[in-house]
Amino acid sequence: MESKKNFPRTFSCEFFPPKTEQGRANLSVTIDELGPLRPAYFSCTYGAGGSTQDGTTDTVKEIIRKGFAAAPHITCIGSTPEKIKTLLDGYIAFGIKRIVALRGDLPTGLDQAGHFLYADQLVAFIRQQTGDHFHIEIAAYPEKHPQAASIQEDLLHFKKKADAGASAAITQYFFNPDAYFRFVDDCAKFGVTIPIVPGIMPITNYKQLARFSESCGAEIPRWVATRLEGYGDDLEAIRAFGLDVTLRLCETLLERGAPGLHFYTLNRAEPTRTIWKQLRL
Image (cartoon, rainbow, N blue to C red):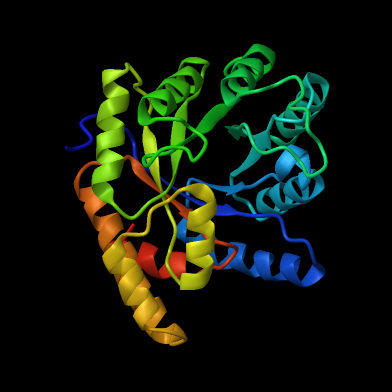
């Protein structure tokens, strides 16, 4: 199973909004260190119900100030059309051309989803309000969204998002390339033609990775988990093994035709930079 379409390849990196002055200073250094790699853009996440809206906007401004393209995330659940429209207008004023459109999670303490229930409604709203101004990225789940009842249901939801006007998709991270290529093939059978860029999580901390994976439904292959567990607290061994696993995954994806890579940096430069350089991107 190979990716059969010849999309232009896009390489990008993702940050989250820092919550402290030290975090902001660290992220500024990370942007400076990753900038020379010339990614297509830096994206920035957005908390449940817009809970990190100011942080996202500040981070996006910092990315633009440093001379790079930015792609802010927008989540719609728990929000209103008026709030989303205000955000879009602001981003247009900043000169932003990319948006990552997501459903998101309800903020703590709220039990009403609000006007938007699903990401396809958000994508359609963005298109309605802004036409073709934005290149809209959506989320994809090669191993199934954790809340979907089945792979088939998940594929139908993904098709709705794509058909609503999405330009491309970024996947949840994964470690099994066959899961990705099977997903791409299944999407093609459903008539989904947009590029689906693999999301890459460099392995640097096993406990953190296991926690993330449990919440998002990403599967850590048994042989990888066993090796990582065996290293115990040997962080150097974990990072060396994790680098090798991630690098081989990226090589396989690109060799088999993936339309780029999107790195979940966790606001750290070195793991992504090392992989990027070894791939000779």
